[in-house]
Image (cartoon, rainbow, N blue to C red; front, side, top):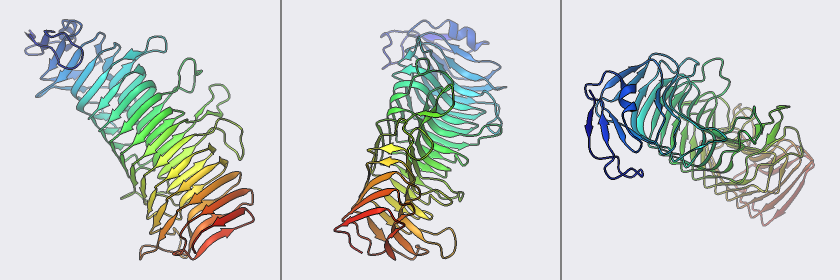
Length: 440
């Protein structure tokens, strides 16, 4: 039998004396959960082997204590939430393996476009060895994910799809493997279902991703939003991911072109670094809709401010890469040990501002190769670069260029930059470059 006590979970709009049910001596956890009334609490204190989801279908609190643990013997959603006003506290979930593809999810919060779930809270706990995601949530409002550890998963630590007014805070995601046939993987992804119209799966909007630690998404992206609106990514630490932070578009459901850009984003105060990963990749990537130079589709808009990027770049990449943007401001960036180039202004950046960039220890990927603080590879860029500083130390390799412009179809205004530590302040192949109060 399950034991019942008298007081409910505080702080989640539960009644003052909502019943608490404990799994002591129970033989069937599903039957125990069925006895918990709306507003009540189930306390899981024991190890339970699971062959199917634990279905949370009404407003309850699911709390894990002591030896409380759910272990899945296959790939499925171990805890499946289909009700509003649910709390999952300190969940411990083990899947059937994170190095293979499958539908294994630790906690799955499932709303619909017509009936989104509201006020679901997931706090604490450890979700491991899952073939798809630690947490997936779709069609929610007011979702809070806080203090959860996710490790050894196939696709994503936290996957948000069409979520509004959401926070992912102080989570720790490590080792996202991307087994075949997955072609991408994420620490935290804020997205929508781009196989259906916006009216069916809308943008994720007003989402804050803050204070998380993401490590070891070695084949793809640590933090990501696809066409999110007013997504704030701040104060995170992202290590050893192919791309640290990606703010990118999503596709049209019919012709599969990149149609919807990320809008009004903020990327602030993050540390993005490579320690044990050497493959090329951007530290921060910002891309609007479209593909080719000058595409007249929705452009990315927002701010990138106060970030530190270490060790990213190489190949065709850079510490920060931007294209298909409008009015984006990149300010207060610290670039350390970036490979080949600090900032790549790729193409189609309209009224881009780069200000107060500090670059040091730029490294060439090839012996004797040049490195650039700012590089424009293609065209259709209008950019203001101001208050840049460059420090050249023993870690610097190769000739250093301040601004390198490889295409004539660009306009750069340079204001009060300090290029004295470079070998060449401006390397220009026919673009318009105007300089005011530059040094060096």
